[in-house]
Amino acid sequence: MKKTTLLFLVLILTGGSLLAQKSGGLFSDKFSSGIDVFNDFVMDAPDGIEFRAFNPGVNIYGIHTFPIKESNFAFTAGLGLGIHNLFSNSTLQDTSGVSFFEPIPDDVDYNKSKLTLTYLDVPAELRFKTDGGFKVALGFKFGVLINAHTKYKGEDENGDKTKTKRAMLSNLETWRYGPTFRIGYKWANLTGFYSISKVFEKNTGPEIYPLSVGIALRPF
View 1: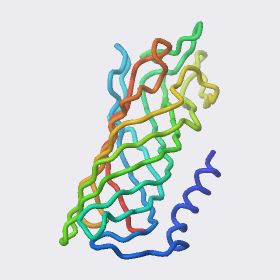
View 2: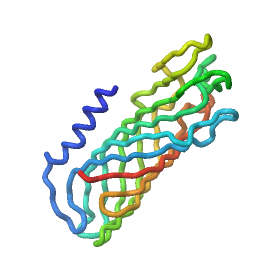
View 3: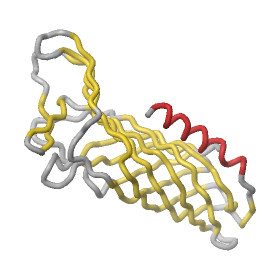
């Protein structure tokens, strides 16, 4: 999966130089790429389960800008990868077709326990920009889950140090979607994503969902 992500990153960051650009008022008809670095706040965590305040993630994407005549508005659409890392004081378990988070006992010493989710996303935005470089955008993102795994590093039930990674996870929602928001100046922006969809399928797992807030960099 790491090799696939790296290849995707290279294609996205170099793709813009292969396509011609046409000016259209404040916006150009062009392909560009960018990176969002964000933190996930996990909403509706089950009782007794605590997710870490810092859950770093990244979006890597390529987008095409379509100016709306010679105005201050433009429409964009593209393709990207969204990688989320959700750290908690629990491990993910599955019993009788139902997934749940099992709290790690207080007497167990561990360094990390996380759930990593990777989505292939299709983002779209309506953008507004002023002559001075101020920008704001409202959009929507629709994605499909392409990879998921848990990783645990710490003591096992015998008190021995262990590292475990599990990739065959049950009851995860295949699709995710929700609105996006950006505001900023030139190529630096604050960004947000509110996931309407849950991480797990209804009635088969905890009904958690991430709220992503971060910084969008588009120097390319």
